[in-house]
Amino acid sequence: MLGELAERDGQTLVKKRDVPLGEARSLTVVSPEDPDGTELLLEPSGHPAVQPYKTSLVQDGIPATSFAVADVPAEAGRLRELGVQFTQEPLEMGPVTTAVFDDACGNLIQIVHSK
Image (cartoon, rainbow, N blue to C red; front, side, top):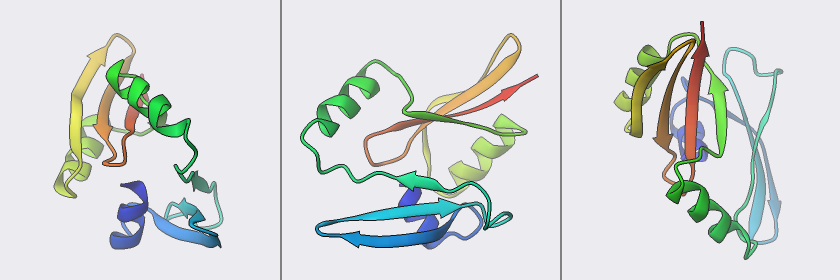
């Protein structure tokens, strides 16, 4: 879903590189506020080990990655407006607030803010 958001909503991520690799492609996305900043590589999932790995993480509720945000409830609301489905609503846990969403590609993604 991150790739889909990158392609349809410049407010979320913008595509930086898209290199064909046979049946797959190497795709990176960046923040529109910092197009020369950190690139997020979206890995292809054609290798046979990928699906069992992703399935196990989701079954155990383990996010594949985590992103720090300034305001978890606000970011969750913004993402929800874009159609993102949350598996864990914003939750305060002592010094951190987290939320977890399904990226619609078989991964759980966490957003977090530390106080």
